[in-house]
Image (spheres, rainbow, N blue to C red):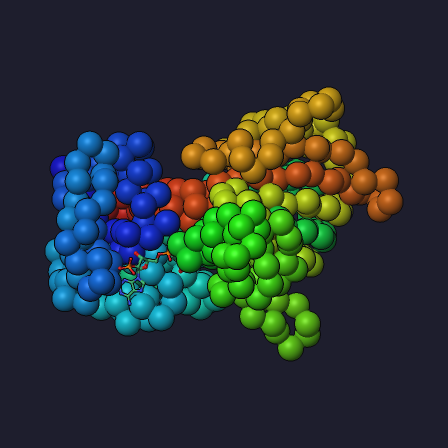
Length: 340
Ligand SMILES: NC(=O)c1ccc[n+]([C@@H]2O[C@H](COP(=O)([O-])OP(=O)(O)OC[C@H]3O[C@@H](n4cnc5c(N)ncnc54)[C@H](OP(=O)(O)O)[C@@H]3O)[C@@H](O)[C@H]2O)c1
């Protein structure tokens, strides 16, 4: 016996990846439904070898469905997630709407699977921000060994983190650079993204940081340890898929770079590619379509007492969103519903 599962936002980037990953991981599905806005009613999406016809989220009844994987943005989530939860259908949400609610678990299954117990508070589980998810997968095993005091992270985030329109803007703007009569001014981004980088993701906060940077701070504390201090600079780069992060970590105890490499090699969800030679590290284009969070360039930082630097790359549509959501669904199935 398998699960009845709804994919909410099935026509979007994350929804598309959720369908792919459920099929790839042979999630025990009894029935699956693709939901999106009325605009997409009747459009087709692939699920393994089958095709699903998209239904209208607005008129869908979640009663009798086990889980709904939401990837529709905060506004639509605010309307529809409580309806699904009230019908007894567990919501696993990709938006930021519920992440900071202390009653709602924020889960990265490799890091804090025990938080699943709090699902019953509201029948909603939140998925973290893409840049946080990949970072905490690497931080947790190192924290368990040497206690992290402080993290300084700079991100290099791909445009797919901004949805379909953001991908189109990079594509169209890049083409227009070679055809000056076809000018494509910024719409989704605040400045030209083609052949440029933009140190601004999400809205500005009062202290001058951006909400994306704030999310990395608050979510790392909620998922790994409230005592870890994090400071982040989040940058959008002209890459289609795959977020990269330069991470500087300060520990309470000394941690040798070789031991850190061994710990990360054994860590769930992590793949270490770290050769000190040309190309002996991972770049975002190589992580696309993969499940792993890739770690490279592990090295001592001798400017602080117990410091390490590393380079962290992952497919933001997968570990940063769809894969993590599916892993939560697997966890909920395994630990709570026990069908499958
Ligand atoms: N991309 C990432 O790396 C990433 C990472 C973590 C979290 N997230 C979050 O995941 C969510 C989706 O992101 P995305 O990149 O997949 O966006 P997207 O490609 O723009 O897709 C948005 C999806 O939401 C649907 N939708 C929007 N408004 C709706 C409404 N009122 N009613 C029903 N369906 C509606 C769209 O349906 P139509 O096609 O019918 O318009 C589409 O299926 C966002 O909350 C985002 O912040 C994304």
